Length: 284
Image 1 (cartoon, rainbow, N blue to C red):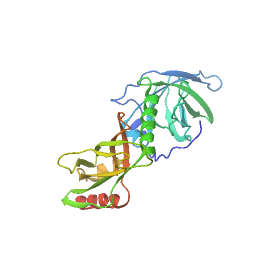
Image 2: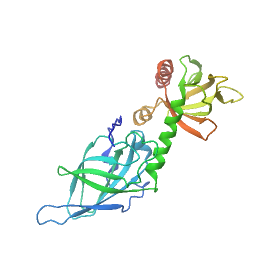
Image 3: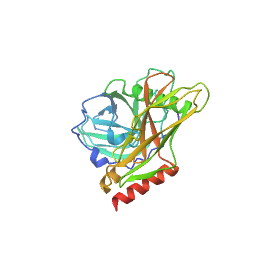
Image 4: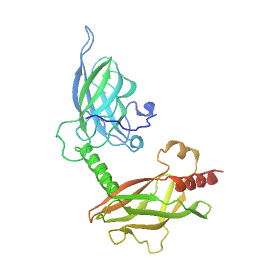
């Protein structure tokens, strides 16, 4: 497995050090790190969980516990899982005191769609210049395969249809603009229903159609659009600095009569300019 994830990880190790109240970071699968002469070995264990904070950087929450009697420093980490291509090592330089634990963002690569081996995931941790493999305990069990399935389902939708925000937007209220979301076949035969669009921490989204009609495409109507309204619900600098998905909305699309799938929509072109202007006006 080889590949690269596009990750903007200027993330917060100070926040991650030690225990965190909303994550259960008990012992996981372990391995021993050979110590220097006259020192005992240091068993490491690792658990992996989802994290709202880290997932904005396309990362999971890796908790590493140092069960030994000497301090170590984790110089880099890398996820090795059959469900994702191998992302590049991420430099960390995180100290882990003896009998202590730290939580570290662990990036995941491009999903491996289709049949994959049922190998146990590992974290490759660089310690004192050596790569040490530590088996990962997933919490819950199957976390990585579930995440892979979600990403592969979204990829299947976007391979069949184009989904984008339109370029023309009008200010209807001081903090609200209205425009359209557009759906189109990429190839004949695909049917898709855009059932819902949701906002994020910064923007609230609602249908601008009083009837709330779904947007549908098929061979009979290969392209369609529907009106939506976007409201800037939070314009404070703290939210804008901390939140990293400001211009990404979530669409829920049912492809070829199947279950609906969440797909990210990134505002571009006229939609991006309209949202940026909306933020500027409500912050001023």
